[in-house]
Each structure stands twice: as C-alpha cells, then as structure tokens.
Length: 150
Image 1: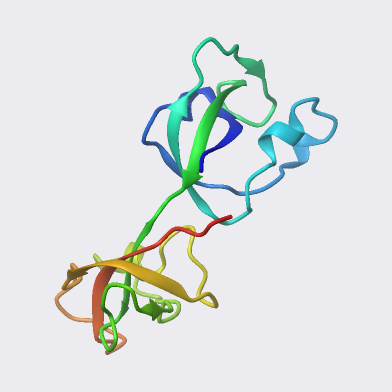
Image 2: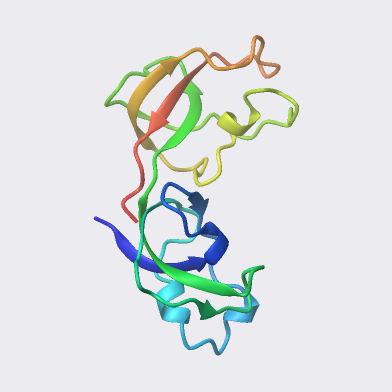
C-alpha cells in the first residue's frame, strides 16, 4: 500500500528508488517535517506516483531547494546471499561486510537498504553473481529480497 511523502523535486519521478536516511539537522522547525519523516529510516523505497497538481514546497535539505508530494512503497532489494538454501520463498541473511569495493558484486553483497542482522524472504532467484571469484571464499547466489513492510 503506497504512502504519501515529500521528496526532493529532482527525485520526484516514478520508478526512482532511494533509501530513507532519516531526519537531517535542517529539518528542525520545518512546517512540513511530519510529511517528510513518515518513512522508516534505512529502508529502500520506490516512487510509484508523483502527485499531480501539488505545489513545490521550500526545503533546506534538498539540493534543488524544494520537495514534492509522491506516493512510495517499500522496494525489493537485489542482493547476494549464501547459495545453500537460496530458493524462492526461503529466508536468508546477507553474509556480512566485504572489504573488496572493486569487486563487481560489492553492491550486491552490501546492498543499500538492507541490514546484515535482518532476515529477508527471497522473492526470486537470479543465479550466479557477477563476480568470477569471491575473495572471501563465499559461495553466493544473486536473488531479489522481498521489501520490508515499513
């Protein structure tokens, strides 16, 4: 079910995904803060609709200086998980941090919007990850994790 929130005007486009970072110091005293801060910090969201006919509101946080009303919903996360037990419908955790930032799988091993301590349901299995060799000797499978409800 979509949630109405305010995001930076440059981000206000259907299909845009973002991770909600929480309150910034510039939010203090803003009359719109309750409309902006209604998402769960650290969760990934996708813009599903830009509200037509809404005005741009001044914002001290966003680079373009304004926000617009949009509908968002929790977004799925593409990630690498341990191959053992990685099938659609099963639950999995991320394997943990990886220091190899140049690896083509790094963004999948440490995906934005996912927490190493959380367990996620696998929505879809894609198969082999983009790397040829895991330098941490992990056997991984690329999957889509169901979005969090928050």
